[in-house]
Length: 118
Ligand code: AMP
Image 1 (cartoon, helix red, strand yellow):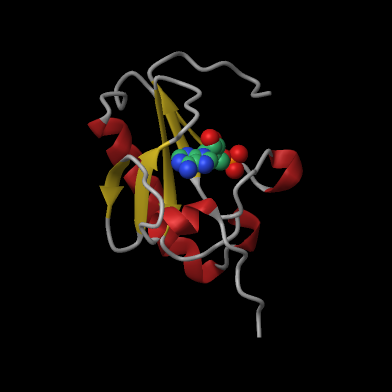
Image 2: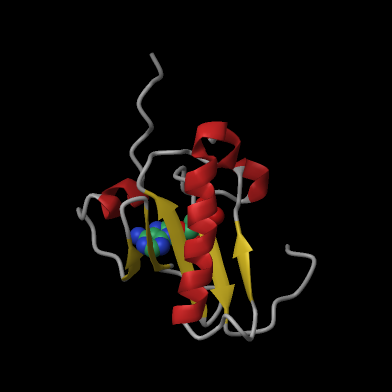
């Protein structure tokens, strides 16, 4: 049997144990504003299912991941940055810069992004 996923701050947000500025909710995922925004719009989209990161996702998660990407676009539209452009970021593991062990897409926009990322 797999060990249960370690408790994360996002699990607490999902269970309503700590507050978040939620901008989207459905049966598969929620989206809320990042507490430390890196752009005028910075929203995190997370699955209700406990998946540590993209490296831990399985082929069975494909539909969920696709749905989450569609939600990223919906969030961008609702935030008024769909047409100006936006960036979706997914950090994986230590070198990827992941600090919370619950899969999440960052939706960033409202300013011009630079490349390459740091
Ligand atoms: P990452 O570094 O890709 O794992 O991203 C984690 C993100 O979660 C960071 O951008 C943090 O600012 C954000 N974060 C951490 N705690 C909270 C919280 N309680 N509410 C909203 N965002 C958070």
